[in-house]
Amino acid sequence: MPTPLTDPALIARFAALTGAPNALTADAAIEPHLIELRGLYRGESPLVLRPGSTEEVSAILRLAHETGTAIVPQGGNTGLVGGQSPRPGQGEIVLSLARLNAIRSLDPVGQTMVAEAGVILAQAQQAASEAGLLFPLSLGSEGSCQIGGNLSSNAGGTAVLAYGTMRQLCLGLEVVLPDGEIWNGLRALKKDNTGYDLRDLFIGAEGTLGVITAAVLKLWPAPRGHETIYAGVDTPDTALRLFRMAQDYCGPSLTGFELMPRIGIEFTTRHIEGVRDPLGDPHPWYVLIDISSGQSQEAARAMLEGLFVAAEAQGLIRDAAAAETEAQRQAFWKLRESMSWAQKPEGGSIKHDVSVPVALVPAFLARADRAVKSVMSDARIVAFGHMGDGNIHYNISQPPGADTQAFLARWKEMNGIVHGIVLELGGSISAEHGIGQLKRDELAAIRSPVEMALMHRIKQALDPRGIMNPGKVVAAR
Image (cartoon, rainbow, N blue to C red):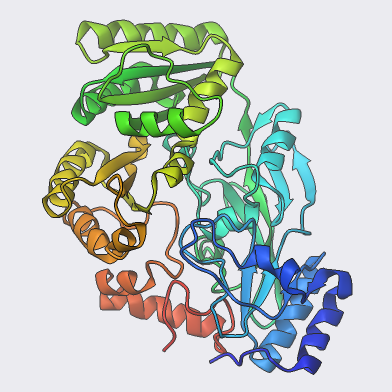
């Protein structure tokens, strides 16, 4: 087990590795690194280190390994399961990767980018765009989340339907191992069949096996045509039928298909400045469809028009608006991407980041709604997300006027109800947010003994002293 960092002399040794300006010990300087975005976790740490190179990360981990000091890697601190938060009373060092923020290279022919862990996602997107290419990962927090955190949590976002999660967007990694050794796996190869895929050990591991310091990211040609449509529909089943039709009409050009409920639209237009509903009349459900053509704007428009005519003929769409400008397109997406933040002013919210097979999304929503309402009839259910890949953010907002703390005290009860249905349908209790602290014990309860034993063996093999982000993903043995 790691030893809590309390010795001033040892703190000074760690601080010397980055230099005093990048070794934070004052409470005010440390504070932003301790507060988790949703307020579920508030950490404690005697020291935040901000290394400026892979070699400095290596020196820090060598000393941590030698002294048994726990290290909590942290990117943009936008995680939602407490994976980036140091635990109270444990004397854990926060290792901020913010200064490792260089884009080391960009290859327009091979369509790859080598980016350090602290590069902000929006900056990676911009660098690709300036080269006439596309880095397709898109998240609501893209203005502050970092590439290292995206990889460590295997982030998904709104374009998984066409491009996949971060596992599919990464070709190679540079990782500092728990003993300080550096693994340079920055290979920009699309075919490499030489033994175990070590890269996939660290993607999604949430910093429990090592520190990702850089990555080779896959890029795509920038679309030559783009269309976005926002439509009102009757039910999730109608939305599913529309999704299947969109697949037929658009094929790989279908790059986004989001599902949103009326209550989510109401929350967002009420609380997010500059957001409005593009449709005049209210509808029970909405979909946001994104089409990207590699040929031309005319080709994208033709796919959109063909889909719209066919959907209207079958009565799948009540009303719709197509974005006529890039500003309108951004406004449509802001409505969707602001939905998570719009729930906060409404009081407490119990969150679920789940996935089920795409064909079972309507069945999941119907069953979960009935089950939640049976124990809390006035709960406000805000279920939205990436219907195209089966990932639904099934959030439950507190009843109007309810006591927030009493409502949040039922978090585990609601998790049990919703996750039970998810598992019965062959789904996952964590689609893109990870495990962290929030779902660690639940993971152990639902995964088979063989799976958990394999995870513990990997952890023990790579991090025998247990210093890497302890208490996250898998419990110490």
